[in-house]
Amino acid sequence: MRKSPCYERSAMGLRSFIHSLTAPPFRHRNTVDQEVKMVLVVNNNLKMGKGKIAAQAGHAAVSSTLKCGKEAPDILESWLASGQKKICVKGNDADHLLQLEKLASDKGILCTKIHDAGHTQIPSGSLTVLALGPDGESLLSSITGELKLL
Amino acid sequence: MVLIARKDLRLSAGKLAVQCAHAATSCALAANKSEKRLLERWKNSGARKICLQVEDLPSLQRLAGQAQSANLITHIVKDAGHTEIPPGTITVLGIGPGPRRSIDALVQDLKPY
Image (tube, rainbow over all chains, first blue to last red; front, side):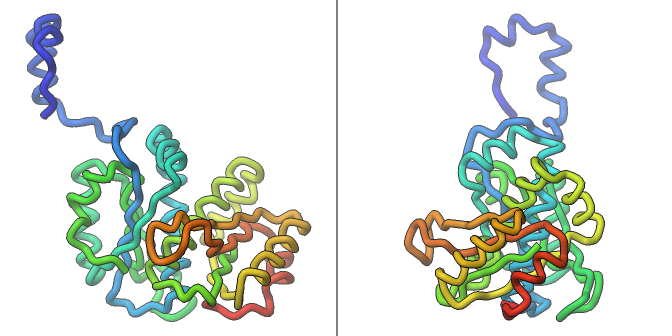
């Protein structure tokens, strides 16, 4: 919980002071004051080829970028300006990805799931990649910090 | 959309995925500015993407030139070089989204990565 300085607190009415302590954080914060990046969690259980993984990661990145452009354009801008940082990590299986998604969406991080159409390599509808962000680095690493790089 | 990666760099799976994701987002954002209708059509038809390989840098650049002269959206990804490879290395070329026929004409001889 953010501490507001005393002078600000005294200027504020009692009700709004209590509200500032109990209100839920903004679902989509519009700015982040730290490094912004995107994490792509790949379902490692599916044994996809390298090219397949790359294409799926591309899907995830594009759709979360477009989504972020609608919901939090300022975050998107700072992400683009700082070189579109992305990292790619391994998730154990589809259930693991869903768990991570739940954790992340509870914290208000933008999540995008990619299900494959199944034209090649894997059964249709498999969950291949989960994209988290773009969002602040420390927020993301609280969720995916443990995972290994792909 | 096609994503064309250099085989001679021998990138790891994760690195390759990230580079391709760079190319894909940049191409999509470019399309979002200049050819909104095309982007919508591409998204509605499943945002099709294929990852192909070329042998080396000159063939990648040749393809980039051809794609530009065919008026397709192109984006060349240069890596910042924080990991694995030296900074400024050209890794992936993204072409599209664009009409299937004109992209196929350029890349029909390439192998999937």
